[in-house]
Each structure stands twice: as C-alpha cells, then as structure tokens.
Amino acid sequence: MRNALSVDVEDWFQVGAFERTIDRADWEGLTHRVERNTDAVLDLFEQAGVSATFFTLGWVAERYPALMRRIVQGGHEVASHGYDHARVFTFTAEEFRADLRKSRAILEDASGQAVTGYRAPSFSIDPRTPWAHPILAEEGYRYSSSVAPIRHDHYGWPDSPRFAWNPVAGSSLLELPVTTAKWGKRTLAAGGGGFFRLLPYGFSRWAIRQVNRDERRPAIIYFHPWEIDPDQPRVAGAPLRSRVRHYSNLSVMAAKLRRLTHDFQWTRIDALVDAEAARVS
Image (cartoon, rainbow, N blue to C red; front, side, top):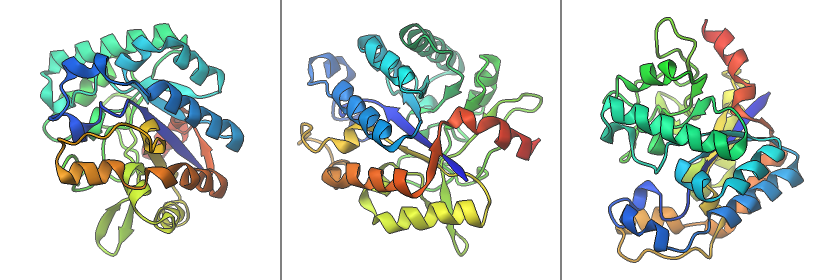
C-alpha cells in the first residue's frame, strides 16, 4: 500500500497559531527559516528515497523560486497552499478565486510545473465555504486535500467523509481528506502535523496500519518544515496553548519522520488521485 506524504511549506511565523500575535505586515522583517528547513526536508526525503507533495504558499515561492525548482528536481509535486495562509472562510467567493489565481501563477512560474492540487490553510474548507469546492473545480484543479474530518478548536469538518469524495456534482474534482483513525465510534485525528509530533510514534504507526489494513485505503499525512527546526525563534506573546502545541517535541520530529519513511511506502498525492477517483466514481 502506497501512502501519500505531504509538506505544508510555510515559515514559523505564518502558522495559524500565531495569526493573532504576529501581524502580516511584519513578516518581511522577521528571520526567514523556510528555505533552510525545506532543504533539510528534501535531504531527508532523498536519503529515504521517497517522493512527496509540497503544498507551498505563493508568498514563499515568490521569495524563494530556486527552492521551488529544487523541489521539482527532487521528483516531488508542487501544489498550492494559497498565497499568504489566510483561511478560506475569511474570503468572499471572488476573493478566494483571486487568491487561487495569484498563488498558482507564482508557483507555476517559479517551479516550471503545472499546479493541479490545493490545500486550504489550516484545513479551512468546511460548511462555511460552500462555494470553495465549486471554484476549485472551475479553476481546473484536479484535487483538493483541504478537509480534516474531525472536531478541533481551530478547524474541522466532522461530517465530511473520511476518504476520497467528489464535492462537486458533474466535476472530476476530488477531495482527499487528511487521515483519521477509528477507536470504537470515535474518529481520531491521525493525519500528521502536531498530532504526529506530540503523540507517541506508535499511535501514528497504529493509525496508518489500521487505514491500510482494515479500510484498504492509503493514508494522507502532512507536516511543516518548521517542525524539524528546534532553533526557531520563540513568540513570547502567543497564548500558552499555542506555544505548547507549536514548540513541543521539535527536537524529535526529524527522527520520527525517518522512522515513518522507513516503516511505510510513500508517494506524492497526485500519484494516488486516479486510483482514489475510481473508488468513488
């Protein structure tokens, strides 16, 4: 079973946890670590012999076009994460369309690769954004991986299907939610990110095996380049919960990722789309 590994390419100061603490107007003057951290991820993937999808902010690609080319040269997919990590439900429908077009143009120009995949910042496509999937379909996207079918204080669409589904009637657009596992009647977040970093590795291994063995479906896992950077600056003014979530276990993340790449088979998300689409057609 091949699973999909994905990286949400954003810098340490662009995360949802700090969006009310760090002003976007101050981003340019902060220490940028996204290039060095993403290069470290590329090295890790090269050593493991895996390919992945890099959902990248247009803001990052605009400033580091050579990094986008290195991602492509490594055999990976470049996909869109929007322009500057604004959550989808903060847009109007037309603002969302404009953000899609702006970020895609930057990513394609920088990478030289067609962009056919999209992931909403902070998994912010949910019942508040009924126009989001139709616009993605109209703009020619092949797939979205923008839904977390869980309950969470920052995001979530618990009524979403757990696996691939067609969100727009008459369209081939596929929504590929990040992975969840079942514990009795409970749906558990198991898609990576902070859950992978904070919980014991054995939980993620169990969850992926459950999805592969019992559901016969690929897992879709994600993380961020800043999660392997224990030396990143600290944001003292952020809420305590946000700081605990953001900074805990940064020093062990790279080792856990190496175990993950060793224990399972991995590929890009776009390599799984046709097979997953056939399951729901």
